[in-house]
Amino acid sequence: MTPPLGRMRPLHPATHGIDDLTSRFGLEIAPSAGAPTTAGVALTGVTVASSATEPGDLFVALQGLKAHGATYAAQAVAAGAVAVLTDAVGAAACAAIRPALGVPVLVAADPRALLGDIAAWVFGAPAQGLVTVGVTGTNGKTTTTYFVDAALRRLHPTTAVLGTVELRIGDDAVESPRTTVEAPALHALLALARERGATAASLEASSHALALGRVHGLTFDVVGFTNLQRDHLDFHGTMEGYFADKARLFAPEQARRGVVVVDDAWGRRLVAEARIPVESVATHVGAPEGATADWAVVDATIGLDGVGSTFTLRGPDGESHACFSPLPGLVNVSNAALAIVLAYRAGVPFDEAVAGVGSAHAIPGRMERVIERTGGWPLALVDYAHTPDALELALQAVRPITPGRLFIVFGSDGDRDMGKRPIMGATAARLADVLIVTDENPRSEVPAQIRAEILAGAREQRPSGTDILEATSRAEAIRTALRLADDGDTIIITGKGHEPTQEIAGVFHRYNDRDVLQAAVRDALAAAEAVE
Ligand SMILES: CC(=O)N[C@H]1[C@@H](OP(=O)(O)OP(=O)(O)OC[C@H]2O[C@@H](n3ccc(=O)[nH]c3=O)[C@H](O)[C@@H]2O)O[C@H](CO)[C@@H](O)[C@@H]1O[C@H](C)C(=O)N[C@@H](C)C(=O)N[C@H](CCC(=O)O)C(=O)O
Ligand SMILES: Nc1ncnc2c1ncn2[C@@H]1O[C@H](COP(=O)(O)OP(=O)(O)OP(=O)(O)O)[C@@H](O)[C@H]1O
Image (cartoon, rainbow, N blue to C red; front, side):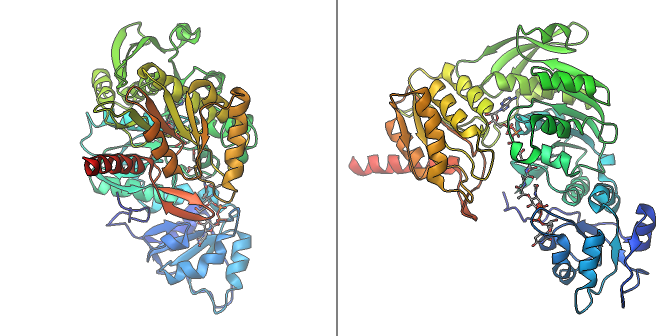
């Protein structure tokens, strides 16, 4: 995979007159002495980031949490921006730039509200030429989008998958800077996908993205909801606010139809409140929702080899279908059931959707089996669980495939929801045998303090403190687990999943759990060979 700044823009963008832009979107031209005329100015792209600006771009200068984008307008112009769009505050800042900015400054009351539509227009409304599936929810977005993609590929030779792990078009991928990129990057990616012959795309829509309009300018063919669990309260404030932001995806301006997992009360409420036609999917065998949901998982068998689960999905016509989830645990039965219905509603024949999801490949950092239980090694997996609920489900998923002890190596993010730390400590102490508490992404926080908060929860659950260890380096924590574990044991390393970096005190260090695990195995083998 190329690093995050790999170029993901169309190679042959259309050219638009700036006067066309101003009249189409009702933009004002900022009166400022010596401002250049808009006549003849042509644009070929849009961006909100000075660092990503390319010649021919419209630079949209937005008010951020830390700064106003207008602060960077001169840098964007130096990089080739041919015009700036901003709000009144930004326009005043641009007018104050000396010597003059040198490009026209356009003004709108709320540029962010227009950004998605402008980006879609500039990049030629690429989504209209693609079958699009969007997935939201606290957990399971990435897994579900990969499952959907596997099903879409049965019908579409070239597809795009855009989410937390990577931005992938066909077989080319770059690291993703976040779960859902800003609208200009999104529409540029979709335009590139079309240039490369893609006919379908699956996207993750994070709650931040929905709150900030990052998927505006795109009406999905189908959208899915996985679940709503405690997370991101630092951004949304309350669960009610978090739900309201998720629900924005289930509106006619964003999607034509929806598929909602109704295992939790939030899903059931979404079915009642959605402003588009939705179907419900119940995935907990035997739960009351199964009787009334359009689709229901009526039995599920977890494969004890840990590779996946078989399950039966009852459809709206009452017919039962044999299905398979290729990843361990009941959560992945839920993700697979949702993905099958999403792909089916996106036009994939039902049997093809079932076969596609059932044969989906491993997803980086999602219950990813890195070391198999062979040759004396324990089974070792890397997973992205970083909420209390996800951690509980991940541990439950691996317990049945663990004849010996269950080890967990984990931490919790700095500068994010602090309340979940003791809960995660207690969950791990309840469901795992050996805990190695270490760092995740401490960011600006003191790592030892984060670990102390997790350890407090763990020790409250297990007052003896037996088998609760602390490691100041994540790599060392993984090596310790590997040294202590026997071949009947399982090690699950949670929290960072696919992440290619670890963020400590503002510095992103190259780091990946899978690479560390594999290196530890190589070193152990080399050491054993040296002894022989
Ligand atoms: C809350 C949020 O999403 N913030 C994002 C937002 O920050 P901000 O609005 O405060 O921006 P700012 O830093 O004040 O800058 C203001 C403007 O100036 C521009 N700028 C800034 C600096 C510069 O040198 N040049 C420049 O042009 C910025 O692009 C921005 O438009 O715009 C910044 C630039 O694009 C992002 O880096 C920043 O994401 C931060 C890093 C972030 O952590 N976002 C997370 C919370 C996020 O979006 N997460 C979701 C959900 C993940 C999940 O489900 O787990 C996601 O979709 O990834
Ligand atoms: N349906 C689910 N319900 C609860 N937990 C799940 C579910 N699916 C996956 N998980 C757990 O949550 C973790 C994250 O899964 P995934 O990456 O698919 O979700 P996500 O919504 O994309 O997360 P994020 O937005 O944080 O990237 C997995 O590693 C797994 O432990």
